[in-house]
Length: 231
Image (cartoon, rainbow, N blue to C red; front, side, top):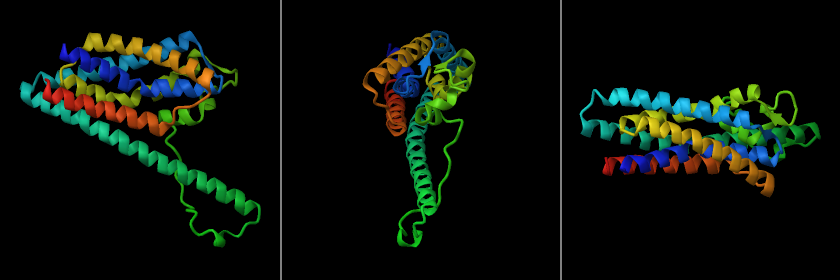
């Protein structure tokens, strides 16, 4: 029963990204077809199945207390890393904005010597990160049709899934039920995308990358702590 609760926490934390991206697509009125939604959910579920299976295979060779400790430590570490990575990406994004502003000001003939506080350094956001789709939803709509079809959803689905693989391995070592968690991931993903899109379309307010990353990280940390004390 305790692992069932953990499965719910894992699925919701893994689908925060799906929800946030879907909200961004709703704001932009970029429709996500039902087949595309199913594909995203299927890839998410397969990623969960694979990572949990790897974790479960590792767990078989470890004594229960050791497996519990390693699984919990992995989840907590991944949660903190996710929060740190989110904050670092936010810094990079801000530097990129500053560089764009500098270029505009230079083009306008402004002497940048009078604005020393503007940092010229900037780094681009990883194009494989889900945050690229969150901040610029249009990049997935390759044919500019206003709808994310199945072919276009392939890259999006992998971008949303790849960040969750490490979490799944840690959860597998901790002993989460593979079949139940995989099925739950599939269903939660479909709901997250559907509800996220409808909310974005209705309220036109995006969920920022930093909010999604921090929320997901906190949930994963909580899951790791929970699994440690209630194996």
